[in-house]
Image 1: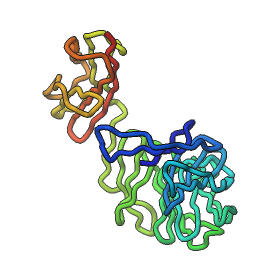
Image 2: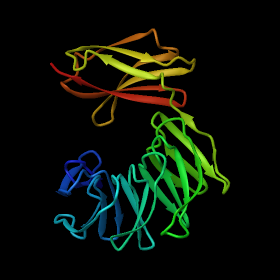
Image 3: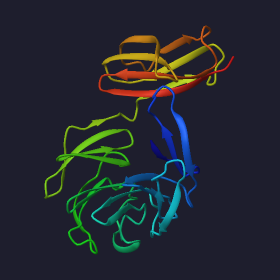
Length: 277
């Protein structure tokens, strides 16, 4: 498992035993590691104001930086396709590199957080600018093809056939590019007013939990340990819960980190709490 660890650079963790992951190695990058893409034995690490670092991962226990590519913006993520590196370059929009040289750029309205490439289309999560599609037939001069102003801040994208899934701050939106713009599909948006809070946090043995979910659907609040094991179901009933306080007596549990999960219809949220005795 390869992760961009901000201050820690590129980190490799062995998850062959999911219940007991082990550290393998890491290498510090010049800038803040924000995203990582693998291509063969090379990891392309987007490192914020330091562009993109190419790291040799052929030996996971001995990582080596091969070279670094500068970008005009703040590199959040990149993809590699057909000899080109496409960089979600923050306030600079989309930057396209070939052999480490900037050959094309499109300055979007927002701040580009993620990019995916499908043939001659580049699909961007553009922050407050929403979902943007560019025609990259000519890599030196990308052209606007369509967009959709998503309800929140577009952060990440996943492509599945014709469907574009957008992680949009408060929820998931599904869209489809028609060639004449972008149309919304069956999106599920997490209402801004949903909230799960607990106090005091950290706590000694008793925890007060307040859930705010002002629509009438079946709801559950459960407790999980750090291994993902469900310990207790604290509430099961109908929302709204905005006036309800649920109490958890954790006196029989040991000190440590626990997770509260609120499920309500198609929505859910998680809150971390710390038990200190």
